[in-house]
Image 1 (cartoon, helix red, strand yellow):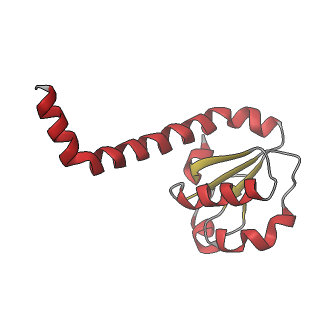
Image 2 (image 1 turned 90 degrees about the vertical axis):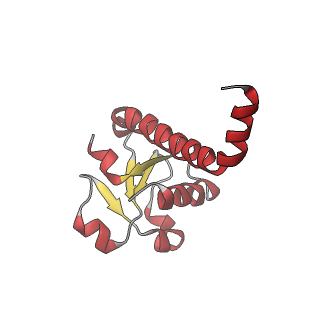
Length: 121
């Protein structure tokens, strides 16, 4: 394949390439958090699941607290600010939004673990 062919393919398929890169980045970041879990647990980290109450009731990781994303802003006072917060949801999207909200409100450090199933590791 010549450079011209590669360039043409990239121009044609750039949305797909971008999507694959985004999912790859999201997956790698979540794996990094999973690797840190033993250390974070030793530090007393809060494991926060931001799925709905019904989703949480259908399955959750041991030791997680459930505060749905839609309620999180109003319930920030329920979370300690002196320990790490590890956020999860179904896929990592809502937990990403929750992590941004927490950081914006002075919670540091905050980690997005992606799917709640990752916390079962």
